Length: 249
Image (cartoon, rainbow, N blue to C red; front, side, top):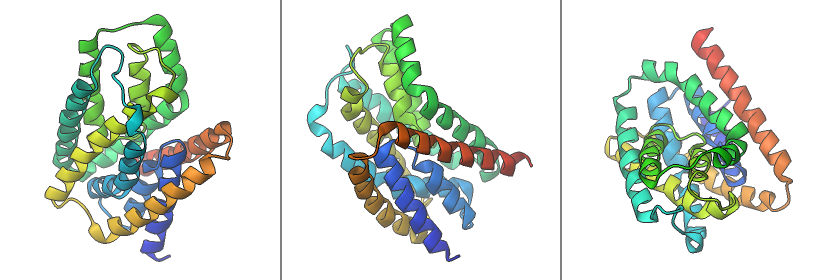
């Protein structure tokens, strides 16, 4: 099959998944690797390819931006930006062989977060409360993860924020989208400056993901949330198993 068709299809599906429930990386990253892009460069290119859709979502949510509990949004933004830059640099310093070894485990973490993240957030909120300084430290770590890989990082953020903010998950969508975009922005800038992006593939993915994001928004208005969530988990689980087999078999 033509590699550009593979990349376009992956971008279309990845953009749709991000608009519905997240997890677009589960499709775009393996697609780039399958057509011969080295894993580190594939991860960088996937981040850039999916970025416009994420940024557009952040703009759409701009009216709902509020502090996270007692922690100012500016402080959270600073921690995320610094973390995103550190994570992107860490990825560029990681040899492809090492990243190939880590990738199945990163996918597993993201898959588990997609599966249990919302319930985990509710459970944590019922048992613990933490200080704002600890939230900033964790947010820095999540920013690093976001810049390095980023799968399901938004769900991780909301789960942690539940320890200092009792609002519903839906009401946290605006700051979640903004801070995920902040980490991705730093990663995208660093990846471009370091010439780590395979542009011929990334531009195809970027266009497809933008179309997919629009289509996903239309589908999301009608599709039942449990069906969307189940479909996302099936895709994520299958790809995670595939990469474990690739790494160890």
